[in-house]
Length: 270
Ligand SMILES: CSC[C@H]1O[C@H](OP(=O)(O)O)[C@H](O)[C@@H]1O
Ligand SMILES: Nc1ncnc2[nH]cnc12
Image (cartoon, rainbow, N blue to C red; front, side, top):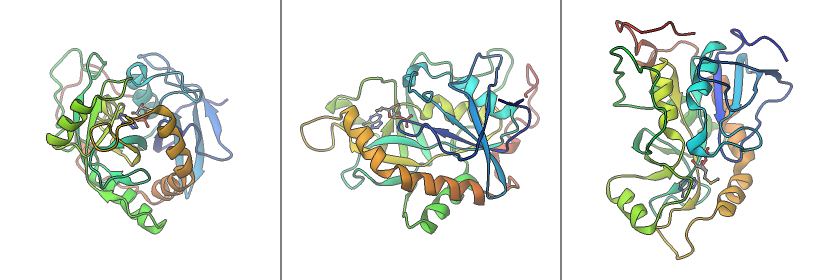
């Protein structure tokens, strides 16, 4: 285990089914004012970038989506030097054409969670812009990396983020489609907004593991289905992620970096 200061500049937050990513990695135990992150953070060089990997549920999946220490996770990554994050996730499809095995690079989200710690700013006047929750530069890099790896990911989509841990009812699921949702998961919020509150670039690649309950069939979603489809696609996802982190532009030209410019913060960022 080594000291964790400024050892990485790109972060990957793995979700259900993705508990490790890097070969020949060093392990870092990081503490934050918000407690411990979900697990030790591993770091390795990939294509000239120093990449930090953190499994959001912990490597043994001990944190369900509503108990993930999101604030500690994002803070820990920033404190290591990370400024750009790619956060893969498993999702349900809310449209029949988005079947299992489809990759989507979302550009919007709808928050249907409740009771989660979703801000660092419990004092002061800090109201970040969140009209576009995903970093455009990161999205382009992920889409291009996918194409080079032979994966034509769907460019854009709205993630409906539910509280979980249960899956949705058919009526909820139909409603999510009707209000414009394309995919559904349980973790994109507050992860995306906390990244924005720390002026980090945050993009995602979502693997559709199932069609959600309102979309088709009468079996409903099961956890087994999610893990089984995920594990059939893990190698492809890993290839895209490694390609994406290696080709992500080092210079941040998007608005994410300037999110907090001109705002008086109640504390210093790491
Ligand atoms: C294991 S089924 C539900 C689980 O899958 C998704 O995980 P993640 O977003 O971390 O990839 C969903 O959000 C739930 O956490
Ligand atoms: N149908 C679904 N609903 C919520 N989260 C999911 N993660 C994977 N599939 C899901």
